[in-house]
Image (cartoon, rainbow, N blue to C red; front, side, top):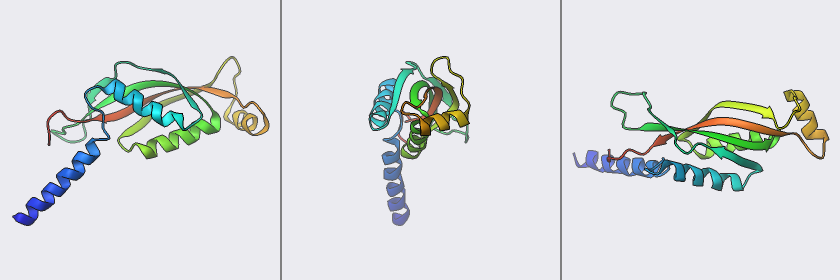
Length: 145
């Protein structure tokens, strides 16, 4: 019994440490600050973000204590910078995931992926992209587990 109690306390502390990376009560401020700090180090510009996230049950297990918040995000970036940003973002935040990614060139020019890569490699001024995506993140439960 004492061994189990010690292991349970150890796991509870691990869980609490992981929950510190999840969205608290003020989800918008937390998400905006988290995303803004992350974007400062990259060549990606935030152009818009939803004020009120969609809140939903995760639905993975019965009585699962976490919910998810879904934020709509718009970005502006060059092709290669966007790829690096997406990879880094999902690796840096294991409790967030990007979904419904929509990419189109900024302005009137319609380019395919090959043309974007070629313009990125050959041009002094590579093509900029307008990006829409949704970020799903877990919400920290209000009551301790």
